[in-house]
Length: 575
Image (cartoon, rainbow, N blue to C red; front, side, top):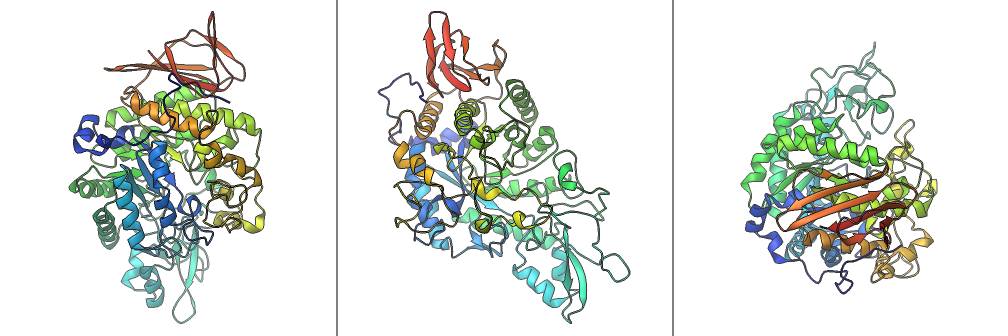
C-alpha cells in the first residue's frame, strides 16, 4: 500500500514541533489548544520498558517522548500509573498521590512531565474517581472499624436482604459479571454488610454523596495540577452518582442495556455538579488545563451535557468508535456528533481504538455488527486497508482526535493469546463482558527481529504479555522511512493536518455529491479549502478530482475522466 504526497521532497517526519503551538497567544487564537488537538494514548504497561523487567514504566515512556514529538501529536494521555494492587491493571487505585513502584517514582513522573513540556507536548493523566482499590486506606479502615465507622459512609455499605442479610441489597450487576455487591465479615468474624462495586470486587465504589469524597478529589486534582499536568481523562465519568435509594433495576442481563438507557448507577444528572466544581479548579491554573470525560451515555446528546461551557472540555465519542465502515452510518454519526456539540460550544472528539476495545485494524477485518470486542483475527489485509482509510477520515473531521498506541503501526489485536497468560479480570468472571482486552494491550514493537522487539533494553528479554512473531515486521524501526508503511502515513497525515488550517478547525462539514458508498466533504478556512473523499466500498470508484491531492491511504490512479479511488481508501485534497 502506498500513500501519495503532493511534495515528495517533504520529509515524512517533521524535524521539530513549532514552538508557537504551546504559547498562550496561540491558544487564544485557536480558542483552546484542545479543540483540534491530536492526543496519543499511552498504556504504560505496554509502551516501553526502561529497566528490563518486562513491564512498561515511566522512564521507558520518557525515553520515547521524542518519538511522539516527531509523530506530530499535541498531547499524551497516560493510563493509570498510581500505586495499585493491579487487580484491574491500575484502575484500582490504592494511593492517588503515589506512583506504583512497577512504573517508577514521583520523581520519574515529574521528569516525564518536564521533558514533555520541553518537547512541546502536553501531559494528560488518568483519574479514577468512581472507585478505589479495596486496599485503599479508607476502605481498609472501614472494614477494620466495622458497622458505624464514618469511613463506611465514603463507600456504599448496605445491609443485605433476606432473613439473615444473605442476599445482596439490590439486583445490580457488575460490569465484569456477577452481582455488583460483595459481603464483608465484621471484625468479630460474623457475616456483615455488603459493599457496592460496579466493576471487580477489588474496586469498591465511592459514595459521592459524602462531602469527604468530593473534598479528597479536589485535593487530588490540585496535587497533580501543581505537578504540572495539563489535564485529566476521567475514568467512568458517568458513574459517580447513583440514583437515590439504590433502586432495583428489575432486569437481568443488564450489560445488554448499557448504552441504551439511563441506568440508576450510570449517567445520573447529579454528576454534573461535580464537574462544575472541577472546572473551577482547572480554570484557576494557567495554560488551559482540561478535563476529558469517559462517559458512556445512551446518546451523543447526553454526552454533550458533560461538556457544557462550565463543565469539562471534551468527552469521548463512543458512538463514533462503535460505527462500522459504512458510508451512510458514518455520515449519520458524524452529523449527529457535530450537531450535538455545537449548542454547548464544545469540540467533537473522534476515536477509533483504546485500551478497552479491539483494535480497529481487527474490527474492520471482520464482518459488521460484531461490536467492539471481537475474538477472531478476520481478514488482516482488508482490516489494515480499512483502518488506514478510517484514520485519514477521522483526522479530517473538525475537532480533536485520539490515537491509541500502536495503531500508527497498523497493529492488529492479538486474538490467540493462551488463556494462561491473560490478565484481564473480566476474563476470569463468569457471565462478564468478553474479557479479551489483553489482545489490544500487548507491548508494542520498536526494533529488532526477536521479542520483545525493543520494548525492553535486553534482546530476548521478558514482556508481560507475549508478542506475536509477525510483529517483527511491524516495528517502528522497520516502518520508519518506508513510504508505504502505516507509520509514515500517520506521520505524513499529522504533518499535513498541522499545515492545513481547515483540518481539525471549525464545527461542521459541507457534504458534497458522491457515488454510493463514498463520503465527500469540504472544509473551508481563510487560508484555503480542503476536501476529503472516503471510499468505503470494496471496489474502485471513479470521481472527479476536487483539487490537488495532498495524501491518500492507498495509491489513487489519475485518468482522463477523473481519479480512481481504490477500494477502502481515503484521500485528502487541497482546493
